[in-house]
Image 1 (cartoon, rainbow, N blue to C red):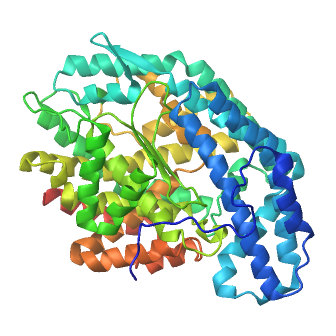
Image 2: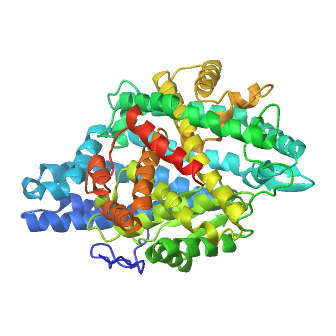
Image 3: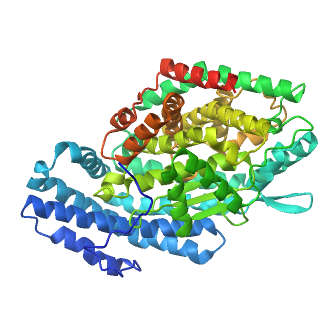
Length: 572
């Protein structure tokens, strides 16, 4: 099947073409229409679901734009106010109606006549939403949405001075690649000290989030927020015990490779002890990789690279560029991190990131580009609910794209030695990200199983877990205070709780697809596109199967994939 990036917004059939969301009063009649409408036949039911889907897409796109605009400019109070207004004054009413509409759908006799295969995951998600819904949680959930965004406001203000110039923390991180070891250490300490200045505010924010999340879980009849959140995230196909098995697999089969990578780095730099500010550096005389200088150059080189993998992938980003759906460069007042935000009515998503001229920015834009391709591939699916795919497969989309792209990085590097270094960087990152994923995931389980912990208990637990997954090759002497609060740099803890093990599961899937790609590029791309185009219409194991992948978190499977990556590193 030929896919096109010439995405078009479907003509509205239910809402007026010019309708825009301003307040609840103007929006409520459309929810009321759906709730009060008679559904005397299966045909009427399908029409009702399509109208509900259209309304959902319009509402979701409006909310997402409010969030995008606010993260692009955290210092603009009007944008923050618009987002807060939606979350506090509109969203609770929507959620209340959504529950009634979900019940109306499941209680309708014609729902039983819907194609069981086509609607299985859609209806499973509806049942899950009904099970979790509690009226008393609506104000709490709205409050949590607003509070979580405060992380970006706090972090967006963080800057440091290097050589008399002000840099965001993302921009300053480039100095950690500098051959001057004294400069690296000075910048590392400056960044860490700047983070510590807001440690109390970030601690207080996190504690408030944990307490409210715990209350949401208890209100819904769950003993812990971790169990509530597993259900909310739609983790139907693996358990908390599987997560713990994954942590052990990382210890057994990933940490030895991590130690090997850092021993090699220590030898390469010819240092007596490898310090945290040495990890991204090259020996004296070797300049840091500079794959691009400006956001425009990053985009053009990315388009060239994606075009060589598959022209459709590049066309997706070109379409987004035309629609002004890219904000790539780091600047003061911009929230940290990077994301691809779906915009379900118009179809083309928005990529947000903080590029500062580093190799990591290349992998970030290609990673988010994989998410964008996923959005394009699912745009034509009949219902908005069909596009609600599991986050684990969403991350397979992005992480596979990173690995596929490596063979085409000559778009960024004309020098063969630099190209080899870039590939080494990527494969090292594929391996070294696993311990951090396990650390963050294990920490979250502890936090929400002990919601009434003290700050001291939290710090102690974090350090213990961090040490479990830290390489003994790295010398952290004298850095205890920085390490104690290093969890605060992970925005997922604040904004999307428990969303982190997905990266580990997806990395396993991505390595599997990369193995296929190395054997037969076209077959691998066909499997990739086929699986992503299914959206959320299949279960997670079925989506992995559609890509000819094995859904498996066992130590044996992890060991097999790590061996493959290790061999690829040796063969560079």
